[in-house]
Length: 331
Image (cartoon, rainbow, N blue to C red; front, side):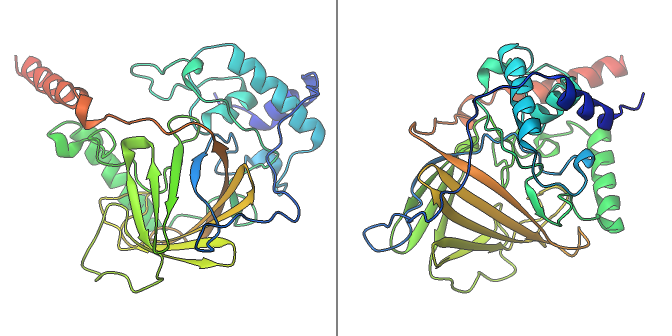
């Protein structure tokens, strides 16, 4: 049965009572960015992506990039009900989908999620999408060859889900969640450390570390391909700009492979807010580049150790289970 999301939106924003208090994430007017000892904009600290703003704008909002005050307050009220009600944890865009539709879609239907108490408190913004370009807040059209590539890869995964460890996803093998890591609300913390010549970005999920020279120099030879690509950074006023290319073809992001060019811009807009903007260009995947903005919030707490390889008994269990299924089928 097809769900009428437009009608559900209208019902949500008409029927819910108002919540009179709210936490707002916004830039400060005339904010003066703090500096390191060597004069760089100081971006250091632990920053969290706990936003509920979806990557793509729900079609209901059409060309509106922000909620009205009334809609925002009603959304806050509904979100508070969901957070206090327990049930399956709402990862990423699933949070807003549950607010809108009233239906919780499990992140992992085969085993079920953690419950909501495992999740960080979420930041509810007035924005209707993380994507700011195209102006409609939606991903640009995917090229036919990219759709065919993704369809072929999905078929291979279905037909050979556990032939060997190579058949399993990179994150399941404790290699990487990729870059950028988009899932919000769960291990979605980053630590930024600066020196005069480099910046290090430590990702809590699988404890990935990117060490980026700030010389704005040439990239490595095109034949060298890396999980997180080859990054070069420089400061443009108060903004740290990082350009990354030379991704491995095995380092997938939403259908894009090694051809993509990834440009990030980090700007501190308040003591508690780090604006993270990224643009992806890939003429083998989308019809045009696209740009998104995530407002990271400052955390007083350190990031946690992510012990993945050290406790990764699941991979052995998955492969052993697949071999057991094959023996039963033969018998």
